Image (tube, rainbow, N blue to C red; front, side, top):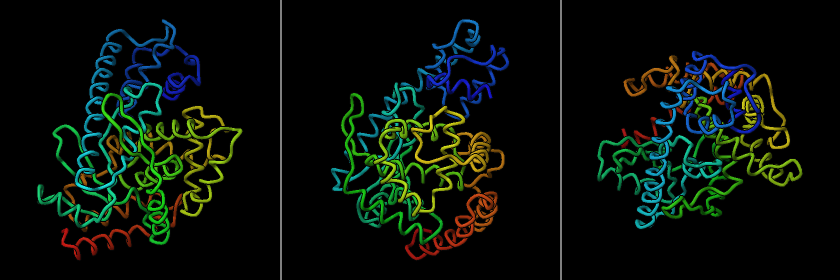
Length: 359
């Protein structure tokens, strides 16, 4: 696929296209890159191309304009990330920034990663945090996992009470216990020109971001930007000559029931991004990997390009339960245990919210 070739060229894994793209193919490449929120990273790879393989001039101008906006968005996100972290610290809550601008620092040029929202994990009592936020925004929805914190006009912010979760209650209990232990060992990074924030340690990041991709496969859908984040994370932390990180991580991944998905993801990272086997967490699974890749290419960034996904905000609670169950059923042949527990999770969340006054 020509789009995958462009990705590998941008990453330095391939030197040139297998054939010179036509103007029509270039416009298709641009549209797929936009849907997958990879315009900035792939633009950086255009300079590697010979003159006869470069895009048409007007498309290049439009692409450049999109990249300038991405850079400005990253500057805003860096500022707002430090701001919201410091705000919660002043309120007495230790916090960790998940994914986002922390991931961007793994890229050769952090300013070219298309930013999303800010996910901040707060260490504190869920009810106290929710009551504080709802004292300012009374109608906000609260779940066991997260709630919005709409204090910045142009920057979506989500408060996480838990970093991620599993539908399977037995595996989820293990996951939350693991995350609580890792909370005691975060690391600090400096966002360019703004200040210092906490992010997960390397070990937790490999587990958490794997579970995050897995979670969104069941929920909204997942795009190549999140997979590229994981590509750069593995590239930074794993080498062919040192298995110490794998020895720490793989038993955790297996214990959480994520090994099959991990192998599928490794296949996609090799097939699309050209990742060598020496930088993979484990051996790839082609069958599950091909299924995952088909879902990723159909969904786009968080399912925004997927015509199968309904309008969640307009559904009743019963419609959400029934639609969500049908939606997860497409994965029954891949991850049956998690599909089986999906209705239980939805019903238990409804009861939890009802009991705590969040409906």
